[in-house]
Length: 196
Image (cartoon, rainbow, N blue to C red; front, top):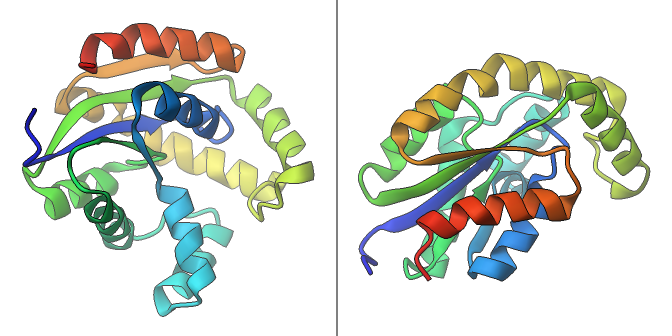
């Protein structure tokens, strides 16, 4: 096994499609290291650093954090874990700028195992997110921010799907089934690309 390069799986999809749920299941089954771009950004906000304050302001507007900040946080987290595991990167890349930034920061130091693209109906997802907002404590689970996040997703994230497919193997799955059914579909495809 080549441990000179980071091995990466990207997982993307609209807000509320169940990326975190699937990541939790995939991490257990395949012994992956789960890195959520959003989690790393929220952790940086908690530190109260200058970057943290900048990130907080951008997230509250429902906008995308500058790529250099996100990539450097990802790289730092990956370096701490080492290269002997596969990294499951959740909610990244979100736009063309993210892809360009990733290529700039990582160059040819990574292998893209696959990209997982979760798809779903927007109206159903809005209901799901508003329900989650009742208990999540997340500042972005309100109708105004949710709508902004969907606009951003349509304008910036959906157009990069063809580019992700060009970068390497990809799996597209309908994320609206039960978490177990979505997971079963994902595993069928992942078993083909992850060597045990």
